[in-house]
Image (cartoon, rainbow, N blue to C red; front, side, top):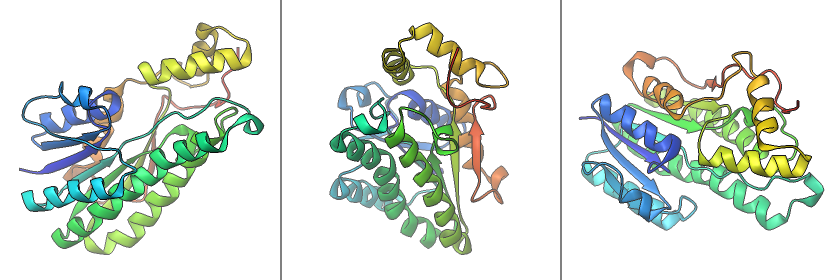
Length: 251
């Protein structure tokens, strides 16, 4: 049975990824900083209460993965939204926290997955970036900077690992329905003097399909990228966003 490890896999996009891979016949392992959420994942999943920025803890998780027989797919999915503020109002500690979880979390996961996949001569790394990694986003400087950097990391992984049969790709979700996006909507509404519904409509109308994305839409792409059907898809940045046309939501 193939094995997938998903960071931040106990809820939201990560949980949807786990469900998708389970349906595809994978053994599902997840990490999450939320121990309570981990208690609610399916009983046949392996769960680890880990902060992705804790290198020792991440190293220990991958040692268990190696002992279990290795890893076929890594979904480096952990991330936080970070502050919503003009760049001059962003506090350095908030910048560092956002970049650390998003970028360093993906780096550490890839760092310890790479040797396992190289030894096996196969594997797929799927990094959850964002459309914020393709456009500048006003009031979201730390998040956009981290997500852009994650695309550079992904393309470098593809170049380094390709000769060993290992692929790396980035998924760029657009506005995804769920609690995290609700927080973003509320903060942007406050920062711009708008209502939550006005900001929501701004995001939706900024896509050609006039729609938010569901977590399962992201999961479906991750499962595809982790499958043999995508055996020659590597170094790609794939948006699942309904085609973002306007990254600065307005009414």
